[in-house]
Every structure is written in structure tokens, then in C-alpha cells.
Length: 367
Ligand SMILES: Cc1ncc(COP(=O)(O)O)c(C=O)c1O
Image (cartoon, rainbow, N blue to C red; front, side):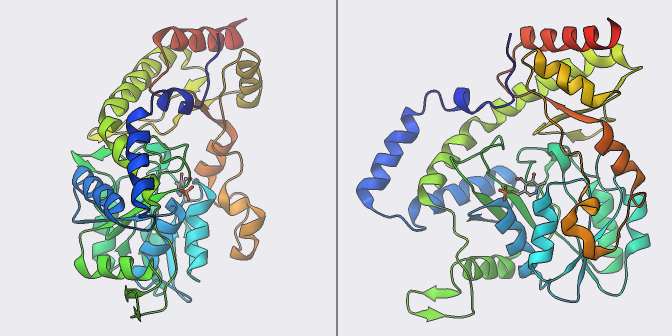
């Protein structure tokens, strides 16, 4: 039996409705912004529960736009975590600001108890990540930010559809970012992203700056750049939104069954604590496993396509050399980098595949 990590072939097996809209787009030749992008943006804003959603050409650009809209730039510090995808920190550095790391907790999310210790007069924003699509403790982060007069940008790139106490991740911070990269559940046949906010002025800036600073065809209000979402991708995204909740429910069911099934390996495998009120998007189904690297090799030899997200924390990357961190600075994150494992647990994984994965894990540890 095979268990693939990618779900894309099944997700797009029948894309006739998307192709029908794409034909209309091609007939219209309206290839920049326009009605399809507007339609997607309105639909996404409604789904998430925000006033403004602006399509971008990647989640990374959504993060950069978010930070820029809050005036983050050279001389500023932005607090984030070292256990995330490289783009979170790349976006901070791109604005000219300095990333400042805090360790993660056992849920693999920003450890709120450590945030205040790294706030300095230069701190401008906190950038929590809903890592793996699981909600960070965003209510506490908002409280800390408010207390210290800081802005919050949620990296909700992997978390479209995740909720915290009934409210969507990506609606708590001042300006927040989502990715629609092919490896995200809501994806658009290539790179794409969305930046969201409830603030009308910030939304106006985001639209202006991400579209060359142009107020209209002939008038530039500010110097800007091109970070627009493509209309054909907006079409794909609008269709994906129709099935997102259904697919999320399937992922949650797969995750719940896996959580239950791996309990019997508690001497070897730990499931991150699932806090009350958090409803994850399970962008990745991550566990902590003893003898992780051997287990990965074993599962792959059994055609189970598992992954490691990620073996090297960001503060130990070559790119981070100038930031002055060293091994030992973030013990929880470093320990997790040594034993995290992502199993294929997407919406098309069947009960038989779950049982097969569990049987293989059992035979790895017990035979
Ligand atoms: C946590 C996180 N932040 C940022 C990004 C960047 O998104 P993109 O690949 O769309 O630029 C991703 C995903 O790739 C991510 O998982």
C-alpha cells in the first residue's frame, strides 16, 4: 500500500468547473486584477470574517505587505519563532527589520511566557506563526502586544480554516497573511497568498503598495511594487473555498483517528497537546518520535511518504549567522527539530491507510 504526502492529483482530479471559468477569463482577456480577483477577495474575507482581503502572489509577499503596512523597517525588531518555514523570517529581513526569536512550547507554537523578556524599545511587532496549521495562543499574544503598544502580524500561511475559540486564525492580529502555495489545502495552481485586515486605512495602503502605488492608470501616490494575485488563480481559489470546510473536516477526522491510534506508542511517540478551543487546519500532522530518522527511513521503505518539518531551526541556518544566535539558545525548538515527523494525513487518506501506517510504526518499534 502507498500513502502519498501530496493530495494534489486527487484534489484536482475533476476540475471541469474551474476550466469552465478559466475559458470565460481567457475570452475576456482581463488578465490583471479585475472581477475574478475581486470576487475571490470578497469570498475569502467573508469566509475568514474580516473586512478586507487582498490577493497577493505568495504568502511571503502577504507577510512583507503586512509588515510594510505597519511601518516595519530598518532599525525595528520583530519577535517571531525559530520553528517555522524560512519565509516568515525572510519577510521580516526583507523589510530591513531584525528578527528576534523566542522559543516554542510543547504545542510547537510561540511560547507566550517568553515574549515579554525579548521586548526592547526597538520592538515594533510580534509575528506569531500558526505552525503546522495549529492555532498559536493568539489571545495571550494579543494581550501582550496591547500591553506594550505593539502590532501583531499573524503568519496564518498554513492555517486557512483553523479556528481559535470559534474565531478564524488570521483575524486577531492587525494585518495577517495566508499562503495559497500548492502544499496548502487552499491552493491555486501555483504561488498565491492573501493579506487581510479590518483596518480601512491599512487595506488602502496594501492595495496601493502591492499595485505599483497606482491610484489609477496614470497617477502613482507612492512608490510601490507588483504583488498582485493572478485572475486565473483567483478563479481556482474561489472554487477551493467552496470545498474548504468539507476538506478540513476530513483532515480533522484523519488527525483524530491518528491521535487515538498512536496513543499505544506513548513510550516512543508524543502527540503535541491539543488545547481546548483550538480547531486545527492540520496543514501538517506532526508528531514527535524517538529514533525519528530511522523511523522515517523505515516508513519510506514501506511507501509511506513522511517528511520532517524541519530538521534545522532557523536560528541555526547559515542565513541567520549575522543574528548572533547559537545552538542551545532555543532548547525546545532544537529538541523538536531532532524528533518531529509529519505523517501523510490529508483529506484523501483512508482508514485503511491509517491502519497501515499504524501497523508499520508498530512493527518499527516492536519487532
Ligand atoms: C509558516 C509559513 N510562512 C510563510 C510561508 C510562505 O508562503 P509562500 O510559500 O506562499 O510564499 C509558508 C509556506 O510556504 C509557511 O508555511
